[in-house]
Structure formats: C-alpha cells, structure tokens
Image 1: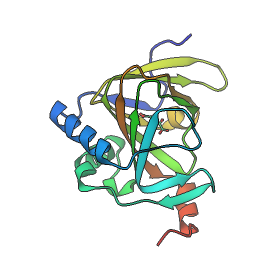
Image 2 (image 1 turned 60 degrees about the horizontal axis):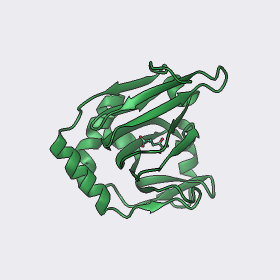
Image 3 (image 1 turned 45 degrees about the horizontal axis):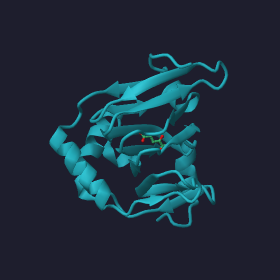
Image 4 (image 1 turned 180 degrees about the vertical axis):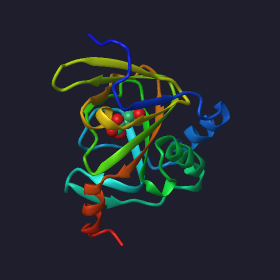
Length: 191
Ligand SMILES: O=C(O)CCC(=O)C(=O)O
C-alpha cells in the first residue's frame, strides 16, 4: 500500500515548459531512432540516448551521437534545476512509453550521479520504495513537470513506473558520478 509524500532528496517542479514546447519535444522524440531494449522483451518502452549511454552488457559506456540542438534549452533548464551546468549532463535519454509500458523498481547505476527527468504527454505515477523499511510513496508526475533524484531518493529508494494507461514521453538527463568519471577514463570509446 503506497502513500503520498516525497522521498528525501526528490525535488519536483511543475510547468517548466509550455504546451507548445512540450509538443515540439514530443515530435523530436518521435523523430529519433527509438528502440525497445533487448533486456526487457515485451515491454513497449522505446528509448534512444545521446552522449554517453550505460552499457548493461559490458558494464561500461557506449558513446552515442551528440544531443541534437532541439534539446539544448531543456538541458539548460534541467541543469539549472539540478544546480549543474549543461555540460555536466553526460547522457540525454529519450523514452516513449506506449500503453502497458513499465519501468521495474530500480536504482540508477552508480556510474551516474544526478538524475533529472522531464515528463511529457500522459501523466505517470512514480512509485518509490524503501529497500529496508518497505515504505512506498506514490509521486504523480504531470506533463511538463521536472524531477531531480538526489540524496536518498537517488541512492537508497528504488523507483518504478507501473503500466502506463496512455502514451507518455520522458527525457532523462544524467550526470556522471566520481565512479562514472573514473570508468569513462578507461572506456575504449572515450576520447
Ligand atoms: O521516464 C522516467 O521518468 C523514468 C526513467 C527511469 O527511471 C530510467 O530511465 O531509469
């Protein structure tokens, strides 16, 4: 049984972009080369990454194409929201959740530090669960809102998305952690 409230370290703000900007971003996501993950068969969630992507197969990084200009203004907004500069945002991940798509409970990989997400389209409820106490918190993410996972919300609590009823898009920006920076130095794809 989940209750409302925010896990410590979760920051949320509403209406950070206009409906017109939202429509433009959705069109840009739809124009991207979205693919469903081979590690998540049957889940109608399609994604594309720009910058650096975590490689689950090799526990390393894959270099992706640079983030297109159309996402630049949003990256600035996300960086400011997180107290960063946009150059700190090593990955820009695009997601399209078709009806039924889910995200299983997880903590983002320790190669990442800040996780900043912008929601577009249908609203979603993000479910946070504490691994020790079992406490659950349901946080509504309306379209055009932004969230930052930091502190306990980032490093202790798991987050998940239950099956989507209507199509939602999201854009997630991630900065590298100290571990991520160290790992990137030894990445064969890095310059
Ligand atoms: O779509 C979102 O806002 C959540 C994305 C997420 O949890 C992830 O990519 O790890």
